[in-house]
Image (cartoon, rainbow, N blue to C red; front, top):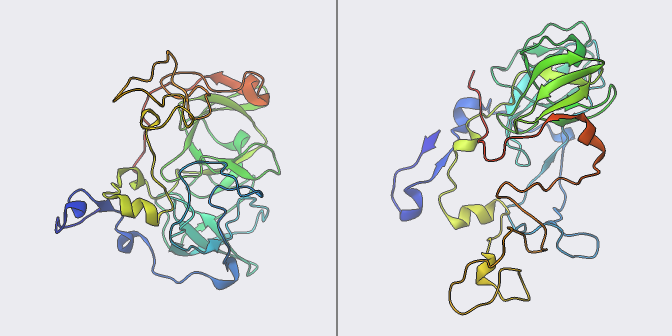
Length: 285
């Protein structure tokens, strides 16, 4: 972690990642980088679909490979780079046939290390193989839900899922949220935990830094008018006046309430619901 001298009030509690110690210093690979405009959480009609997003510094998009469809071809990590659109670090993978792709890197991987996507791959960080071939107790990330599917689970900084069992064609995974769920054993996963495990320790320090990141201010519902929020109105400061906590749309939120849709397709795959209020654990290897 990088701690700043308290030269101003905003610097007093500000922290950040010391990127010079973890990144390789390589410039982005131009063929895999593109520009573009961020939607700022607006839909095609310009209406807000997610609050508190907008503005922020201009970013360039890195094309990151989550399909991992090059199998049985070894690849070498040529660089460790920062991606403004994700919390984990990415690396430029150079395959033996000459193709280059960006991939999300796990902890403990350095420039020059190699990995392999194969059913016969060794169980070591960055290697990718079917869940049925991964031993119980191993940590995995970039988990796909189908044999030819895209990696969709455990992709952010410091995250991992733990393989806790195999049962009837399914692998039992303990997710970062503490939920235990079934995933098809012929789905694929990468060994290890996502890099940049200190990300959760970063203290933003000031409002302006949030705006650079594209995060707009959050206003308390009780400070609004009745037309704008269920908690709004009243003379002076008032409690919310409702038994249940709700968001601006009147839907249940937080405070231990269940917000999952009752008929969601994947409910049958959940063995144990997540523990409400339990903090996320992060491993440092």
